[in-house]
Image (cartoon, rainbow, N blue to C red; front, side, top):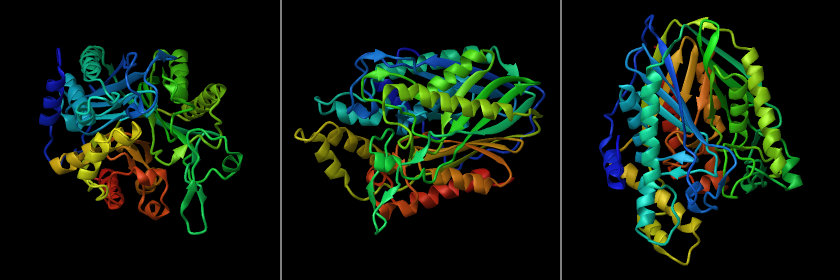
Length: 461
């Protein structure tokens, strides 16, 4: 890719639609199974919008935001997996990122997965939404197309260079460690009728809410290591919590999961460290985080401790099988508000920025559903280890279901893939109400569809 204009980006996104029914087949790894880790800096420039454009734009950088991933070679067509320190990649923009990675690696978009970590002082990238915003002429940006194009260009260069330095993968390892006093369920305060009264966010200073139970969480940080003999080449860490200690101050940061990852990287420079946020749509640090600046490092230290525990549990085993699977879903958009109402809200200059930009995201989702572009779920299965890639802000229940469906297998879940539908609650959450349900762009039937997709990915061949 060279000199991508805004029009070229949108045209490429529109053309990169995959055929339906994609699914991988199990394969025996060849003796030349190799891995090629890559990384680029994706810290946005000053003035770039954050989290949809309704919080302060980037003014300074506390620490860099990165896109880190790997190309796996030698088990059929190459597989590419990447984690990005952004709020989200949505709709055709998510597909465009996967297509760019696939082109650089010499594979197809269905064999590429990109998941966001979901920090909020970061881009919420949806070029379809940005088009709707641009039409108004007075709204702050959520994604600068020129910056996005630059990221894709540098991403492709990094992937191509990485492949020339690919390292053999002979062994795979998995382990887990308990993370203490980080994650808590946001939807914990219900009235006698079972409806949400209030929630704990990423931070919380309401002592009554903080004293309530953690609620349903997954306390385990899971690590999967790709090894050349005993040498760990890439370590992928998975943990479920909203990754913000505080935000809205215009200072770019990878926040506490990124700081933990970077500390691990500094201590083990020969091993590429990648962090994935699990299904955390209803999980945040609010019980343990008052939003003070000093809590960022405290939370980072607790995540790091979980990484260290998981690392101790790693026992490399020879790679015996490699399997890449995909499953497609296209959840229906919720009926209300209608597209016409959303369009009116976007153009109503008496409304707040969030009251106009957020409807633009939902209208982009409705238009995407009408276009028939599916969400692609995927999983990389090596031996009895399943690395599952889910969309958007999936609730923790989907992760726990996946682990149950997986049985004795080691299931590591990365959510925040295609962010088009925003929150993805489970069916029982809808009558409870609450913030997450109010910004779930799909109908309740998404529970059935996503769960069925997970079952397809974890089915034993």
